[in-house]
Amino acid sequence: MQEEIENKTLTLGINSAKFTGNVLKTAISKYLAYRKERKREAIRDSPEVKPFGKVSMAELQQEYGDMRQLDLQDKGLRDFDRIARDHGVRYTVFETGKGHYQVFFKAPNEANMNAAFQKFAALKVKKAERRQSALGVLEKFKALVKNAVVDRTKRKELER
Image 1: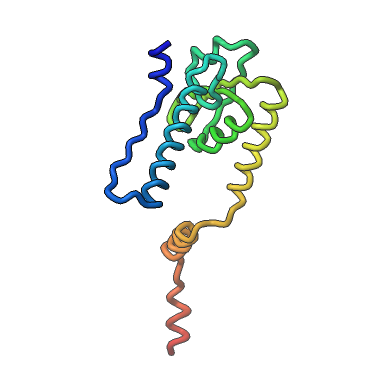
Image 2: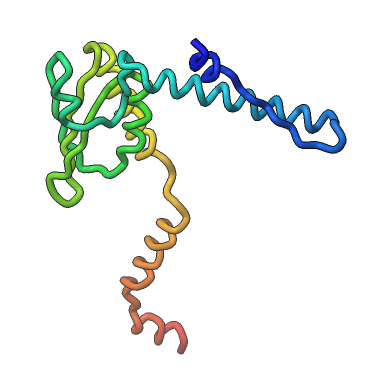
C-alpha cells in the first residue's frame, strides 16, 4: 500500500529566490507535460492497442483476416503511410528489386482498405498534374538549345 502511494506521488520542486508568475507558469507547464507523457505511455503499453501503419511481417500474419498484396514502382510510400494510419490499415513493405516494392496489407474491413487506396490514388494523380518545376523547364530548354539545327546558308544570304 505504501509503495503504491509512493509511486503515485509526484514531487514538484521549484528553486527560486523570488517566486514570480513566470516561475509558476514554467512549473505548471512541466507538470502538465509530465502528465501527458505518462498518459501516452499508459496507452502505448496497453495490450489491446494495435498500431496502424507499418508493422513487421510476423505481426501482420498473426492477425485474423486475409492479407492482400500490391506491387508498386514508386518510392513515395510516405504519403501511403500517412493515409494508411488515418484509415487503420496495417502494412509491411519488401523491396523486390531496384525501385520495385511489394506491399502486404490488412485492414479491419474492406471499406477502410478501399477508402485508403482511393485516397492514395487521388493523391498520386494530383501530384502528377502539378505544374513542372522551374528546374525541369530549364532542363527542357537546355536540351532544345543543344539540339538546335542552324542553317548557315540562309544566314549568309541575309548578310549580303
